[in-house]
Image (cartoon, helix red, strand yellow):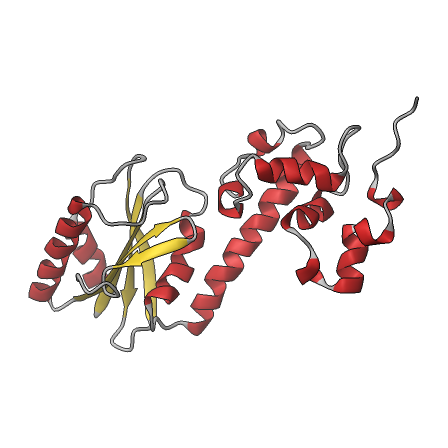
Length: 230
């Protein structure tokens, strides 16, 4: 017996992601339905939505983890070729860039959340720990963000001299420290606390204020300033 065609065109109107978006609006679509629109079709066994659900299930329905999948990893799913994998990755990257652009447009840091929004896309695709600084002028407007170091899964080496060399070169009045914890655990380690104090003390001597240290893990963050330990 010939298997029924699972093309979106053969679904009832309520089940068609494209039509659902047109009639009910984008906010009514699930993550799987949005991905189904990107890939357009499934395979002989799965509709586009069912295939999208399988992809999401492989990362525990976490879009942040989905952004970390490579083209090759996506192509392991039956029905996902290179073109479809590229479409998924491109769409997720646009979402990351939009989040970052929202903060850059404001051009001013007024809270720890602003820093989180600025850096969350930076860390979304990495499996390793990275340490960055955000340089600000006297009005807390963004001058530049710079990657200071990259390490392994559990840590990275940070040279305070490098931090302040960049800060002086860019005439920064203050800086925000920011790094990620690939494990998702945002609590600072003893090493994190000691390093923060060391950099803050050096900044006082150089008249460059360390206003915060943000640790990012998945979709959450820890602010040294908000917690009163800076």
